[in-house]
Image (cartoon, rainbow, N blue to C red; front, side):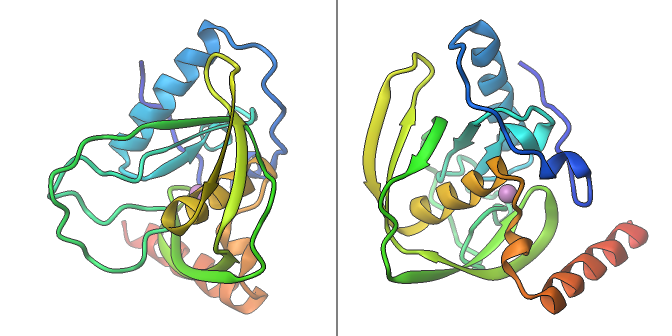
Length: 188
Ligand code: NI
């Protein structure tokens, strides 16, 4: 296992369309192990393979940060500082995920992304979805999702199409976020 480098805007590799996974082999297992290690290290609650430069339809999610003193997590958090109780990790891997039935009603979350570090903005997405995906053995799963899980999965699935959460913002707002990020990088 290894922590991989997370690509950040404006890296053009984040714009790639990810290809379906066809081989459920050891290489895929190694990739998923690295994705979890990289996500927990960041820390974040979701990471797509393309964010570490591997354009395959693979993503990992864990909505339960283990460290109770951890900083607020990146990716679709709700913008508030929580006092997390110590919780167990709940790693979930989604391979070749699809959204089958997005609800008409929408929900707004203050989203962030490890590829757009320390920036947050409100994004509106379907509040509930039915999702279908494969696990590491290629077995198909289907489940209804709502709340943070629905938002996070949609955010991560956008990455597979080369879309970042800031692409959902107006041009003006996106420009402001990128300018702020640029300023932050210069200060670092
Ligand atoms: Ni993201």
